[in-house]
Length: 295
Image (cartoon, rainbow, N blue to C red):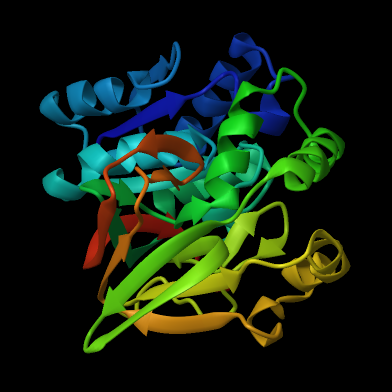
């Protein structure tokens, strides 16, 4: 297989590694796996997708993404229709999908897995025509994703401080939700459409989600008092959000979400604006990903 490695030099906790060091690690991984391939660095949002498209046209059939969920999303959007395998070297701020797949945090080990790991076929979701590989969301998490993306300073402490500040000012929206033969309305803090369980950074938003069951886990968190939100934040890290009073979870293959106002939503942490109705669906087994081999 001819690999191509796409590196986001600005992503998360590997930013301290210079380009020369990354290229050395890639060269070592190529040597270890007895292969050769192309390497390219992204230059900003959207460029990972363009690089992936170019590499696929040049014959690459194993794309390695060295970045976070947003970079993975860009590359996956090109890999899915081409049926190209992707590998992941997690270095984003959250790394939700990498956590879901138990991919190593060490770039040395992750590179080897990305080039020679086992292949797993994952579902992907679609919302308003945009692919998401891990989670999409409407409400406070989409609002917060937009805030996080504008932060100059990254890290758990910065996220926590900005999250608390935004929570004090945020006004939950009113939504209509329709799936199968059921339709209901609710005032919601978050409507999360989850393919995987993890938001990232250890937070588990959808404890029952599976990446290969042909379903999206819809997690509806009602409007709560600010005190109740703060009191129940630990549930995210213990995987018990679904046990909170008023939270509704359901596995769906498609759902329609509506509002009287235009809807803002995120796909794998990147924020977009839509109309007053959003269609969410699942593409079963659409993405081929390399994962650690079972020992």
